[in-house]
Length: 358
Image (cartoon, rainbow, N blue to C red; front, side, top):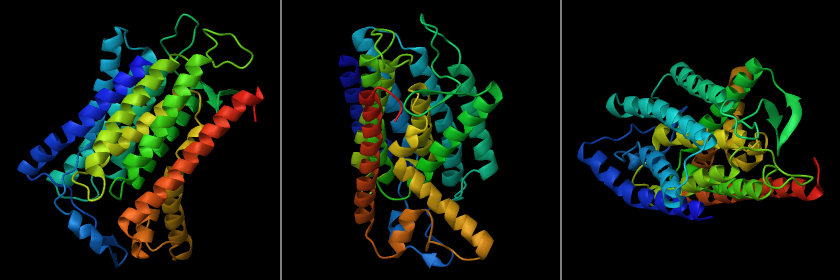
């Protein structure tokens, strides 16, 4: 467990003390993201006060989580695992895509950043590379970081052929990273929600390690590769997000930008795949799902009927226009996120207790 404590502590320190350094650096050069003040004729006056706030704070999240992961292994003098490195590759690859998007927003002052097609191509390249790598590097028991089986709490009997598995991996990564990206619209909302999801994966990783078939062949053990290392990486993410949240909470002194939101979403998808909890992520990240669906409903309704379901999408901006304060929205959405995480972990534990599929 020292691995987890060290990883969390180092991630926290980097997030807490590295973020103000990045804020000063960005402000010194005047690097601030263009702000979306409204849409469809509905202004959001509160967003005007965010103008000039630095972005690209996701750089701290990525650096903090990677250094936390590395520090944990140095402290215990253990090498990294293929599973941990695969998830880190996915996170940093998507962070690079997000960084390109933030660069355009800041230096070109184009609030939309990368074109949607370009961003999806970048996400596809990284996710497909991750999926291919995750099916290699078997351990002494023949386990690879990911498997081609669809999973909920563990692998199911549905095993996808390679082509469909690659498509499935892309859908998971794109949905998760874009979900966090859409949620990152209010100060601290995406960061605080991400802390809860990554905290859940610390619990899942430790539980799978304690009940792994590789060390304890029990009737309902878990067949996963490197579950403890998964928990270490998730713990480093928790620490980095907590440290960053200190500066990202309302009124935010820095935004994570697409560098952070795509990286966080990609890390969640990667953790879900390597822990064999792919469909469980829908519950653990329930808030991200709800916010993403609000955008889907808004677009579909407008194209089919010419009417909008919400005053503005994503959902958090609808409540802003209804007169809710930003802090009120964030706290209430955090409550929803916590309930979703609690439900997901409850189902995960109930499946193990019941001794079979629910």
